[in-house]
Image 1: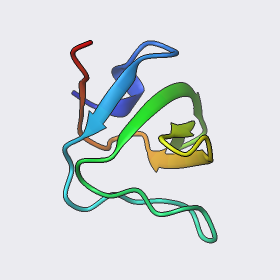
Image 2 (image 1 turned 90 degrees about the vertical axis):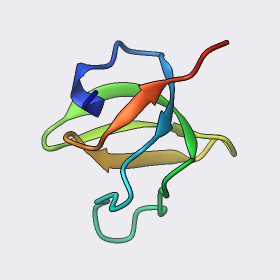
Image 3 (image 1 turned 180 degrees about the vertical axis):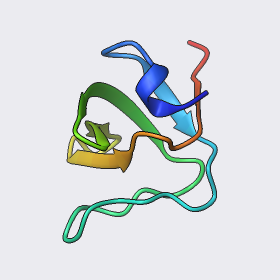
Amino acid sequence: MKAYEVRYGTKVIVTDKDVKVPPDAPLVNKGDEVIIHKLDGMYCNGVNENGDRIYIAAWTEVKPKDN
């Protein structure tokens, strides 16, 4: 599923091997767990495992994490 299809506050695992992030944003890699927040232009913002604000391209492939 694409990141832009995920509901606000959902914890996901990034499954895309080539994650696009804006310049100077923290890198996000395949296998990282993030909490998706909202679509912000062409990027979805969220929070990574360390609590840092991240931005990933809206078309990034992710899968919801089973609790």
